[in-house]
Image 1: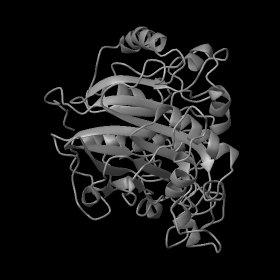
Image 2: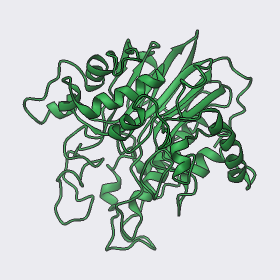
Image 3: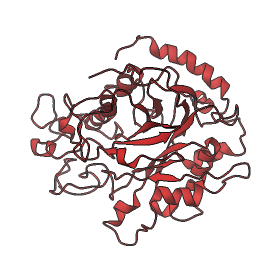
Length: 407
């Protein structure tokens, strides 16, 4: 998996060239490229009340940004799962999933006079571990009280399905081929970084897992899911997840370790790791000849210390194409052209990464410069989220054998 240690400097040079060709970070400047357009957008706690009816400012702004790019396959991170919430609360609408409601109420209707609505025929709203409590109460967050949301759920959430994600596609979803890994246990990953009570270096004042807790604790803070799409006569696997942020932590770096192993999971999956099992019990990773695109907010960027999973599992991993990373003028003005979020400590966290057998034609981050006028796009970008939409045009004509690694 190792590559040249000067790779980051190389990326800085090539990235600057890419940024100059997409001066506002959108596809409209130079026209749409070839291939299928994939996009990932964290819209930050977009909830049921906002998308199930029209007229919400944040939802409309997010739809406006998405319509500027018109992606073929889209993942919206932090979109609440209304079906899960309805299982524990009365009055939650369930006639449509939140992703379908967002499509119907916002994405399908033009959000600016220069834009067209987008018709997504296929949607999927995976079940999330956020706010889901185990059958027996555990004090996962070590606050002295067991079995209470949000800290004692499998993933942080005040209700089941908070901070989940939804997928919308113009291409058919091969439903029989979907593999979800929501219930995969963290302890079943060989060489995992779980801080376990009593082990050397584990601080009893921090967050850790007891031996009993490791027997039930799930790896995915939301879910990891492989969704195959029918694209131009072939199959491309969309790999979706949203690892926990490596912050809000204590002396054991619990969330940092958790994020590291969540990021690692799909790197192992595309390498065909045999320890993996899905929620149906099927074992093994992705087939050697499969094409795939990893998408979403990974909460990990190159150089994030001390564990730096993005460099290890993305940048230095030949199983993902990272020779050219998307950039934006807005990020460049903040000192990092690769940035995908406004917060200062971890600015690059959102990714769209194809397998090496697919051709990356173009990519960018939707973040106009402060002095650029794009029909009010800058205002919409700010209103929608503190993250920025990342997109890539990926040609479905394969470039040849993938030559993927095995681990």
